[in-house]
Image 1 (cartoon, chains in turn yellow, brown):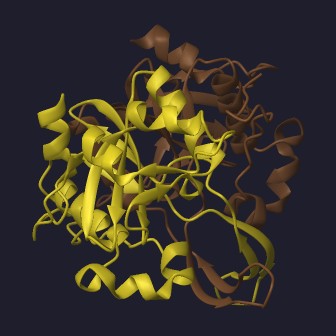
Image 2 (cartoon, chains in turn purple, red):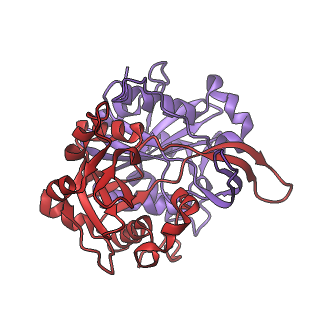
Length: 198
Length: 198
């Protein structure tokens, strides 16, 4: 059990995610949790067991209006979801910089590339250039399969987006990546896969 | 000049910050920019010059209400600022995990400890445990001085918060830390200081 310096129990706040807002249906898939929920729970496990310090970044919002009531907290009254300028997750594991993106698709045979923003592709390239460990966790919700795929293997597919290629065949992801068995605690032990592959 | 794979010019979005919302007066201090503005501009310089990949995390908001107008973007109509669960800045530099917090005070002789949340103190401790590089950039706005202070030197002061100690004397920060000369481009070259100190 992790505790604050003041002894209070450490309860990481779950960031309210655009996915949970927009794709309500997905909130109940994968045994009551989204992939994101599973990853957040896994990261919480890693932190509380002293394995790694990895957090999800807050959902980026463009704040337009804020109201300041007297004697109470400021209220954001108008804000819009922004495309993230980086991947959603990063942190430190065994002194190394870890950076990854989590995506899921309902598509049965392909993973659509549009799931990744240009910013995120650029960011993954930069992380690799600077010696960080960049990867993705890709879920096929129909098959309930999650794959660990290094960014270096995924990035070449984005170079073809000028042509007809708009998605990655599932068979390629099975070949390039490693399927992560979905457990209970932690639910998606992606660092175990990372250890095997390095 | 950094470009997307599609050739589009890379223009990092500036995250709308709680500081900019709440402390309007500070938006015009330090030659037209907040310390945060200077740091964001410095990180942009580091990225565009291939020196490091460091980003500010979005301001964490607790979203309460979202409106979905037909044929237009979802609008957050009620949200509240949350205390961050980590420091505001992290990234990768020469393969190393970099993590830091930026704070400023109007106090002339002491740096109030209340500027740091329990979450952030715990996070800095965890980053050090896992071999990351954790530090703070502390600005005394009255003197317009910015100091680079390693978290390992700062953390002991939080252990005394049970007693009368509620702030760090400026003289201690001058002794423990290194003053960062404020330049033009980049404005606050904190990685140069980090290189010297390692």
